[in-house]
Image (tube, rainbow, N blue to C red; front, side, top):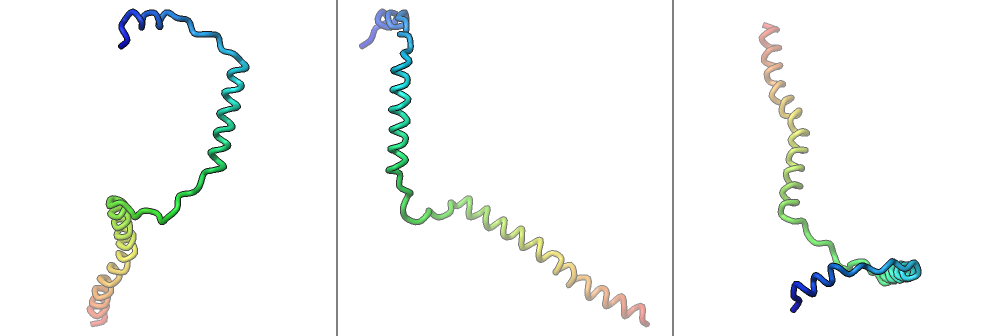
Length: 93
């Protein structure tokens, strides 16, 4: 176990000065590791998972709202047609 005295000693130690050569080696190693990972990367296989329940509800709601906007003028026209016909008959008499 570590006691407070050891932690105090570690806190007071100065960090070594950065070495430019060590930094360059570390960056080169990181770049090489990254390039190797890109080479062995394989896309996931299989089919995509189904929609989550919330996505299904949102999709259903979106479709209902779009259909409602399309059907509203048609319904308004069907309601206005008999009213216009009745008004026309009354004017002709």
